[in-house]
Image 1: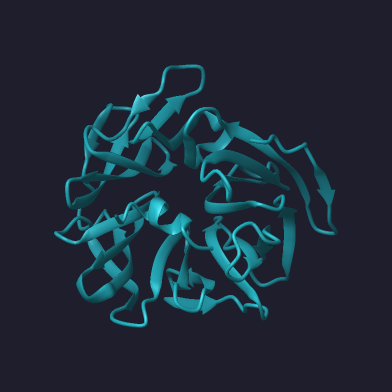
Image 2 (image 1 turned 90 degrees about the horizontal axis):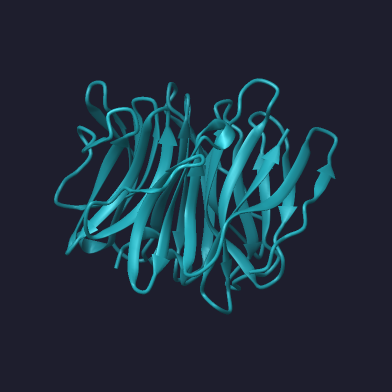
Length: 303
C-alpha cells in the first residue's frame, strides 16, 4: 500500500508464467498479461468473453480512458481532461472524467455511441471510482474536511444510498471496489496507520461486513461477483510489493489464496467478470512495479 492510491483515484514488465493452481474447490489459470508496453496500462475491465476491454493509459503526461471492441480500434472515452476507467456492464462503459478541478462520472453506450451522465451521481464534489452493474452505479465522493463517502445509485429511480462515510482526522479513505447483482464491496484505508480492509455489502438487506485482517497485513482492491464472492488483495503492512496475494472470500464459506504476485510488484485495482454458468469468473487487475512506478494489466480465471 502507499503511493499508488493517489494515481488511481485521480485525486490530485515482466510476463508471468501461466500457472494452474488446483485447490479443493477451484482451479486458477493465470496470471496472463492483457495490456503492456509504453506508459502505464491500468484499471482494466472487460465484458464476458473479452468482447470489449476498457482501461486507462498514462503516457507522456496524458491520462485517457479507452474502450476497445475485440479486433477493432480503441475508442477514447473521456472527451477532454483526464480519463480514469471504471468497468463495463452490457453495452455501458462507465468512467471518471477530470477537467480542471472538477471530477464527474459518465457512461459511454456502445450501441448508440453516445455519452451521458448517470442520474443522481454527479455533484460539485469529487466523484471517483465508478462501477456499474445494470441500473446500479457504485461510486465514491470526496470533499472538504477530509470527507469520504461510498454511494450506490439506482439510475432507474433515480435514488442514491449512502453506504459508508467518514469525515475529519485521522483520515480514512473509502474506496469503491465493485458491484454485481445483490452485492457491492469497497475498501477502508487509514494512511496514518496503513491499516486497511474490505467490506462485503448485500444490497437487499443493507448488511455490511468487514473481512477480518491478520496481524501485520493490509487488505485492499476488492471486487465482487454475482453470488457475493469477494476477490481482494492482501499484503504486508507498509511495504510495496511484499507478500502480495490475490484471495477469494467465498460468500458463506472460506477465505482462500488464489495467486501470489512476485516480490516488488503490487496491485492497484481489480474487476471481476462473471463468464456465465460453468465458465467461472475472470478477475482483471493492474500490476504495479514498485521500482519503476509503471503499471501493466493482467487477468486470472477462477473456476
